Structures are given as structure tokens and as C-alpha cells.
Length: 354
Image (cartoon, rainbow, N blue to C red; front, side, top):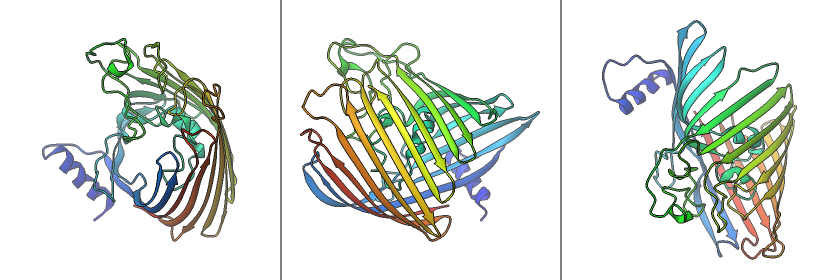
């Protein structure tokens, strides 16, 4: 069965049967599973785990509306191929219009912040680009209830602007952080990037990003801010905080380098402003890919002594084809802060795209 025909069958199953006019649709997916050994001071134990690395299943496509205008859409679910927790909601699901003006889309979407800083998200394991190496992991991945405008590509320059408007709910006591309704799920429970429904009566979050790509070179800048209340006691992340970042990349084919810098208080690690420096390198030869990364997290306030965190990642990938690969990756963390301590993970995995 052709991929488009199968996609129409999936769409029919999701929407029911009836007189529906289908746009050109593509079914796609990616199965990513690893066997991980984890030894982490923060968790206080060591263990083996068959681990799902953001496997997903989705449909995407567009319909030509004439006059240079097109309807575009994507509908993706996270699929846990290890524990059966299928149809994760916080994957890209959006619809919009595209034309000479650019594109306007609404739904659950990757943030402009990630589309800049995420240039360094090069490893296979989902444990690699985490709270420790990406400060935007708290509210800068995918955002529900969002509207994004993307400009056309202008000689390599492009820009995005996002607004998040998450409705409202009735708190018991709006002066207390724990009364923010349906708030951001913590990292221990699995992050979903959901903002509290009563964070603001209007715009809950806004985010802009500017990027330039010319041949092997990439450069980008981004800024995001939450428009919530300021509480007497500090919150992590800060509900009235902001964060900005810069990213640079070079990819010649065999060699690739990226560097990203983040600064702000929208993270899950520390109170107040935190800086993050993250450098990656990659070398490809034949079907082999070697990767390495170093990250350094530096908070402004060292309330617990030496809070700095050093991150080290090494990886090897072998490509059987354009769609099938295996990997071996080591993810390490060192810190004198007793809250975090040291962490070590060895990930052995495989990925098949379709």
C-alpha cells in the first residue's frame, strides 16, 4: 500500500467516515529504542532500562488552494514502543495557511526558541539534550495553544514569532504559586510544556526567533518571556521570567560544529538567571558518524556553594541505510552541588524511520 493511501486510511480512522475532501497526505514515523545503563547521584541508584527515545507516528501534508496559497497541516503523536504509553499529546499538531506572505499556523508547535538553539540537538538518545544541556527544556520545546507566524526566506534570513494563549481557570488562591491551574508538569513527572491556564488573562508567553542560513553557515538569535505573576517566594521556572539565546553552526558535510549560549530564568535547575554554554562537533566518514559535546551551566547565584555543572557527551552512529541506524552514546555530568551530583548514562540503541 502506498504511503499516501495508508495515510488516508489513518486519517479516516481518526476522523470517522463521511464526505471528507483529503489533501495530499504523507504518513511518517520513527521507532527509536535503546538499552540504557544509568548511574545518577540525583536519583540515588543505578539501573538498566529499555528506553523509548521520542518515537513518533504522524501525518502531514498540504492542499493547493490556488493563487500561491496552500493549506498546511501536521498531526503527530508520541508512541512509546517500550511501555505502551501511546499517543502522547505534546507532539506537533497544527494547521495553517502558507503563501507569499510566509505561513501562519496554530496548534501545538515547536517554539522559535528551539528552532534556533536546537541546532545543537544532534544526538540520538533523548537523555542527551535535557535540562542540563538545554535550559529551554522547561518551556522552549513544543508549546500547546500557540500561534506562529513564519516569514518567507529572504536571501537566507527568516524569522518566527509565537504567541501562547492558554485560556483560564479559577484558582483557590491566585497569590500562591501552587494555585496556578494545570501548571507545568515537573521533570520528575515528564515534561509537557503546558503553561498554567491562569498564568495570564491575555498572552501567557511570547517568543521570537531570527535565523540566517547561507551554505554551510547558520546563525540565530531568540528571546522568550512568560507573562505570569511575580510571587514573593521564588519559583522554578520564574513565571514572570524571560530567556534569550544565540546559536551558530557550520556543516560542510563531513564536519559539523555548533555553539549555543543561553541566559535567563526559564529553566528547571536554579532560581534566578543561569547561563549555559554548549558546544558540539561531528565527523562523518562512510556510514560512520562520531559526535562529541561539552556543556557548562553557570548560575548567577551560588546559594549552595559550587553550583556549576559540566556536561560531556560522546557518541558513535552506524548508518545501515538512510532510514536505519544504530548508536552507542555516553552522557556524563559532574557537579560539586549535592543537589545534582554526578551522572553517567550509556545508551545503546537503534532507530528506523519510515
